[in-house]
Image (cartoon, rainbow, N blue to C red):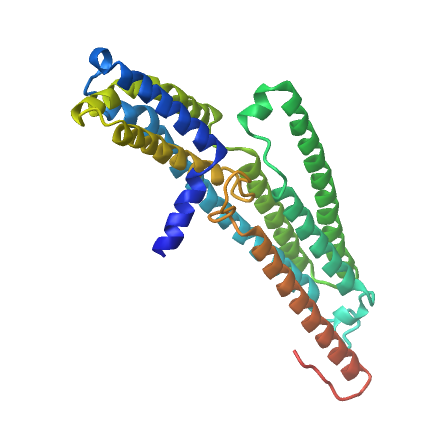
Length: 329
């Protein structure tokens, strides 16, 4: 665990940006150390805590809170989708003519397969939407060439939403087809309520995907990492003076200080999108929502429901023809 923790620490700190930040901090510290007789001062580190640590702590708490919300909403969506699949594929009712054969046998022969395909398509669309790349970076908002990527991603997302709405419409039609063959209105109302839950949970997921932590706070943290070495430099000049002008220790201490701050910033950045890992970090997705795994679990459950529903349907048809029921579910 210790070796793994060290590897994770390195993965969050050893980036191109960390090289730039540390080089800049070392040069600023060296500048003050060369002039320690004029700039040496034992400064209070509370300024560092106020300007950097507090904003970063706020951001990290915010992204972890959003990650937990995304996880909860995804589990709610998973539950609603599986409940819809189970109810639509297996629910039976008394036929209109009062025969012992259930009303479900009156449905079109490929009804269950169509429902399963629509459910899979719905899940695939949600997965594609949540897996879209992030375009909420400051560079996408400030620089005009990068703004094209925002419009491009939004166009794809709008298309996915239109296709998702079509799936929800088809799911509602399936319920109406079941009603046409005698499905009770009260049960149909319950099934429509599951559809409402699906839409509601997806909107929650969409909001968590689209709206992020405050961009201004994130920008302040990054700007402070550039400005701070020139403001806190006299403190490291004082350290240089107190250690008998030891360049090695002073520059190492300065670089390590800013590496820690950058690591905290990268921790926040890695969770900014709870569904898509940051490509700039080695250990991608270490704390993100495991979207692939959760969607695979949903597909597995729906396939199991469909298999069991087909077995039950086959057993019911065998009984209706006077044969021996065979149902292995």
